Length: 89
Length: 206
Image: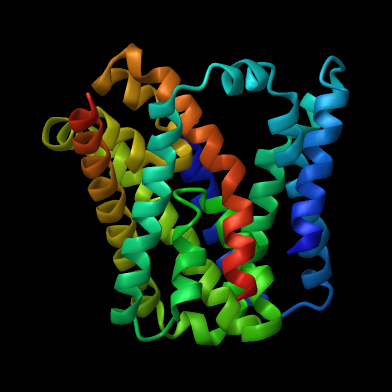
């Protein structure tokens, strides 16, 4: 965890210091390429792991349930926020 | 939308390759270094944003409260709902959903950070759940934006988009909520973008 946060913070700092230069934006622009390679590696690991392949329906069901929970929570919180802001006026 | 499809195709290509070749040594250390590089790139992207300082200075209370509401609502509902998901514990469910649509980063971070405690196979499975759950969130917003706008209001569309309110879902927000909601959507996306790595790392560490 500390490495991840540290590297993120270092990136923000480097980006802030050299923001007038072109190279930090160019490196940041390569993020899609890095993500594609990493997602390929993730897919590769999934394909090479029989435990995942054998339970695809379970993985999909968990993903759908978690999406529904996240969206329902967001909608409820926004509804409460709007109500309380209206009350405050 | 195009970006999500490319990511999905990369995942499927990797999946097919992996099922044909089986496990290859050295792949794990490569992915860790790529992950560090990705985090550095994400940091550079935040740091080099020319509007970051101006946006942070011009923040209104409602602009800050909307991402807070999105995050709190998502986490509270996930925490309660996790009791109905037998396979994953509460912290694992929270790690998946705290990404708020940031599927690329969440899938990779979750699978890497949970590997020491869960093992490669189960951590990969959780990473796949993170990828799919967050892609579904983005797709739901893109497809359902007009209905969400009509039934729950424009703020709900921004909240539903999560981190993608600043990029992929921004055109849909502009179209269905109007241009006046663009600053709110950008601030919402940027604040969730900044907070996501912290939340995922935290929930993976407990």
